[in-house]
Length: 223
Image (cartoon, rainbow, N blue to C red; front, top):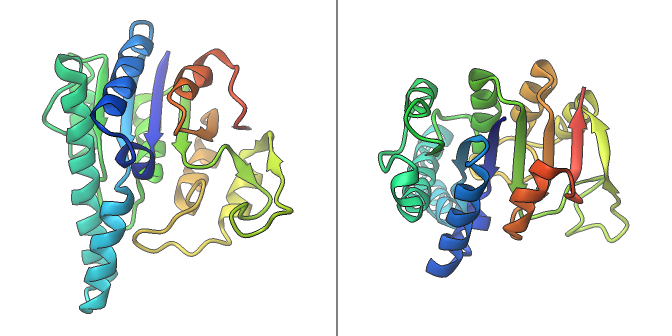
């Protein structure tokens, strides 16, 4: 099976060296039977630089470029933890990622272009790679009816159609450093490609396995 993980930067950045090794070992175990692509987000580092850049009057395009550099730094860190199981040079394009997959069972990359979050990059990569599954491993355990951090009445949606996700996410403003369970562009790509997608809590490394074996408790998006 070909699986693309979108691993939130906030999830990865919270790990110390031992935590990074746990994620690396888990990914290596999964890759024994699957071809894996892992797209890593920028997390707090990206938001910090983007915030300071906005403070000095930088354009959104420049803010995006700074965010991309942060994602690639995080990706290189995970690649280092994976050792020889992934190329240390982080691919900077979809073609580079596909080429690397001819040699490695795990390919790690960050952002690609301004205007695209790493969720969108992961969704596009899933299209390019003809992936069987897209897993968005973030800091929440699924898609909710509203923001669970702000609304105590928010309800998690266990299953939904891709069109429903796209309509829900269309209400979100897309700016550099934006945070949402799935960004609007990624949701539209998932809708047009009919990529089976799971949104789950990536802070528990075991959920990376549960996404594959079907025992996760996140949100499944299909059709």
